[in-house]
Length: 278
Image 1: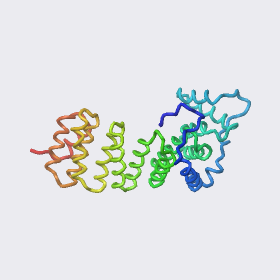
Image 2: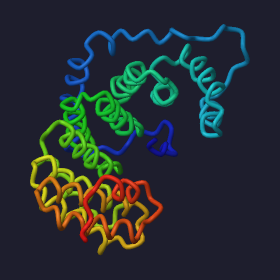
Image 3: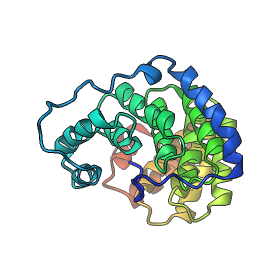
Image 4: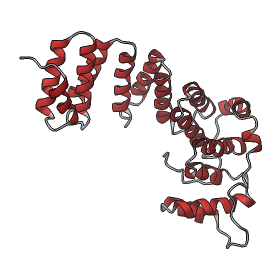
């Protein structure tokens, strides 16, 4: 989950560019869910009146301490009096296990508080929900909206990575590779370097360029020595070489996999299922 920003109510600082992109964000929200967003019933699931009052800070503290049920009850109580409070809506989105219901909470953050400090986080969560529900085009659209409407967001790396994932899952491997390569060029020290590199390899695989995919996988042995996922990477490289008809080379890769990671599930599969050189 995206780290919750410390400022709960201070609006994010907006660039001049944001002034002009924000109206398009409004239109997009209304087109995306014309009825649910505008008419969402925030009273559903409210708690009985007469209970002791609780502050927003106390509710957030419950959430951050892991007391999810108590936090949800507290946020719902606050929502009775403050139905458009972005902090409440944002946290309820994280607390609702139903993805579609969670999406509505995050969309209401954007509708009622587009300039709030949590607005970009909320739109990122909408993008994640779209991707998880295999609504790939909508995920791409949401990511692009975020980058356009919030150019100063500190979530840019995560958004670009998610955009690349959505493009790859939506069978647009060339575009996804461009996004991942852009991420690597702009943020070479990002924690997303390894997953972005793996995604680039997968983009070649999706295009059935198996030789280049294998080459990208095998570069991990050099660039990320000691990386705990190398057994899986070697397995994928062998798979790609096999798909390219390079059976002998694949056998050498499987042999290296077995030697270096003898107890891994991938090594066990290689012993049983795959050809090894004599």
